[in-house]
Length: 282
Image (cartoon, rainbow, N blue to C red; front, side, top):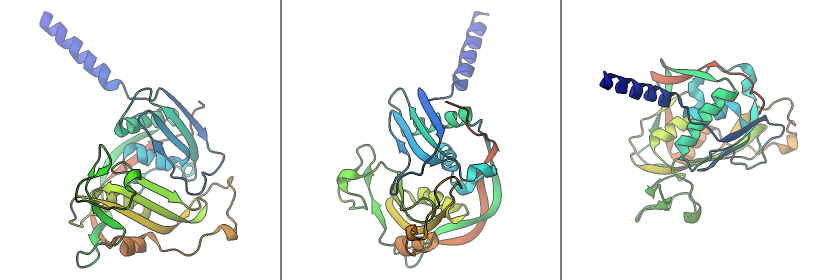
């Protein structure tokens, strides 16, 4: 009888532990009233803070759940142009994954976000080497000590200054203008081809899977022309603000990375939005 009671206590403690979702110590979520400055890299994730000024709501959900935007469905129309200023403190040193888990909790609490995952058979793109196994100038193999962010002996040089190398897997995305047509540069540090393929899915309108056969990690940089949706309440760009002609994302993948997208059909995991609402006040 004593052993049974102890087992019940342990099981109850396990249930309580499973229900305790990681959360920020303090967080502020407010509708954005201005666009981020040109060249802004957007979100900043540190061991004790999360800072996302004027960040798209859809991108916040994508970041929190580790799912490409092309693999998230069920968005209400109002989320298409919704941007928020999100600032939060962890209260203790935390890893990137722990901070993103806290962001999931924040979205569930403030936006009443509920999601589920499901697998669907659909058209996809396979990421392949364009020709003769030769990659482009903006795809460079690197070996990095991800703890110190230093290149290992014999590796490199990569696409980043040695004294300013981002953490492994980071995508530094800069936009010359965030309303209407703009030139976007996406620079990824020490990513696998699988990570690169998943990241490309949001920009090309289909999920992307890796079929390159390239092992190891790479620095990858793409510069391309894109059209960014903008809320009617934000200032509209004038013709003089519009950037010069640039290449499409697909052309940039081919010209700058030496890779290509091949149409296929296969199973793909999706994140489905069951419900999401405008945020509760701070």
